Length: 117
Image (cartoon, rainbow, N blue to C red; front, side):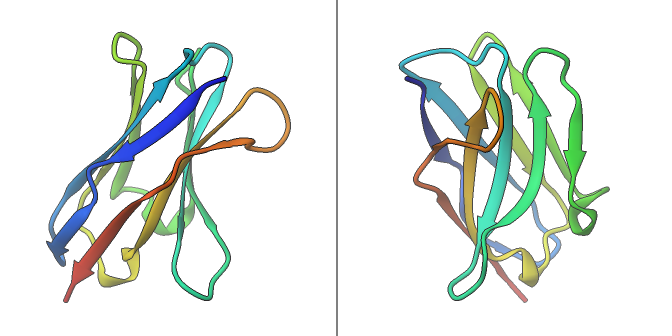
């Protein structure tokens, strides 16, 4: 079964950039969709972006459109989330997840992003 490991989080000033990575081990992405989600304490986990591994079709939540870009690297079996023009409200723990059908059923442990004002 595919396992996911996120990296790339950290502390950045508002207006700055970070690139998150989601690496798969124990398997490969084939017909999967890979998504990024985020969560802050006391709030529901929020969808951020997703990409289809085969066709590279992307989808974003409105609040990150034009600032975040999701992409994939087949050779590295890795999905990226490039985050530009970061805002304090982007502060959250970011998770990647994978699914072949239905709901997202494979999750990483997350990486923390803190955007200071």
